[in-house]
Image (cartoon, rainbow, N blue to C red; front, side, top):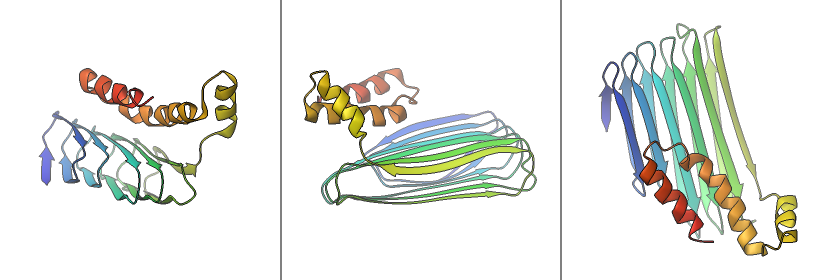
Length: 204
């Protein structure tokens, strides 16, 4: 889907269990905020004019033989814009995840602030995660970070919780839920946010 977000417009959407393919061009002062939960996605955003704000959040909770690829392409073509990306994968069983994150800051995009983070949690030895963060900066006066990490549950935290009388399975789920809630907490719609967070807690 191709979209152009007009000057000063706010575009915010939460996609759940729905594959997403977006090409978005932003005009001056516009704000794009997108969440994708449990679905493949490809999101390409071009900040064409000054003062744009872009937020992309992704959460993939994979089980069995599920396989999901997530792609983000954020291009700062002019200055004075901001962007933030937070993409998280939780992988159990034989599931496979793949993240491609492309963040570009053009030569004329001075005074840009851009951040890209990908964090992945492996719950089994047979789960696989491939991550490809890419950061290209051609301007001098910018603040930009990117990072990717893949790991397992903190065994010391599990041990501590068990010492507090929480059984191991519940302790594992509490830690997984805490990992996922960071993404859900950024949803602006309070009712939807609470519904999704409560759905995690209902599994305890």
